[in-house]
Amino acid sequence: MNRRTLKNDVIVIAAIAVVAAVIWCVVKLSSKAGEFAVVELNGVETARYSLNEDIRAEIACGDGCVNTLVIRNGEAYIESANCPDKLCVKQHGIRMTGETIICLPHRLIVRIIGEYGVDATV
Image (cartoon, rainbow, N blue to C red; front, side, top):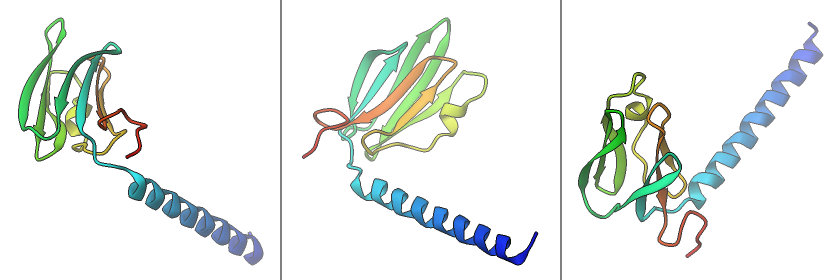
């Protein structure tokens, strides 16, 4: 590999990193705090909780499947689940519109929406 190819590769990688950083900043700065945590099982909304009230809710998904949703300080997260991989428990808390927590084995989705839905503008 010659020096010119290596230099061009470094320039391309740096340009991609800068573009990715700009996109990340735009997304973070344009996201809004959510109002509700919507719980969906098998694609059907089963519950809607305000992020302004602290709660702990047991979500029974059928066949003995249970997830514990906690909302505390305006943030929603799955505290415990009896699914095999526990990826939903390992996900960080969510509070901004459009953020989701997904438990595939239980077909559970918790998503954050604003007062008028995900795409609303205030």
